[in-house]
Length: 112
Image (cartoon, rainbow, N blue to C red; front, top):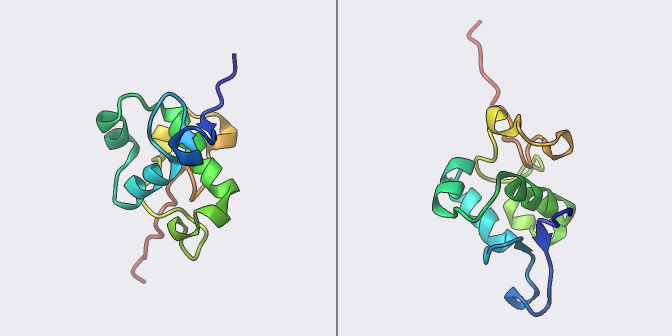
């Protein structure tokens, strides 16, 4: 059985997209991320979540950007910490989207 990690049902959560087996909407998850919640903290405070489900929610937001514009910066990246490279290593390749699922690496400034 293939799990559809993000579900939309007009009879559940007033039709707001939500994560499989939770009462957490994609919007709520994005708000938590924008407020500094990384993957480890999300999993600790919401044990019903799964790593792949979180990544799928971030991808869903990117695919439905017009619905979630306030969560994207000028560069097209989602606000907040996202997955680290180590956390993303366990994800399928198609979910390792830089700036959306995986946090973009900050450029380092070198002294000349």
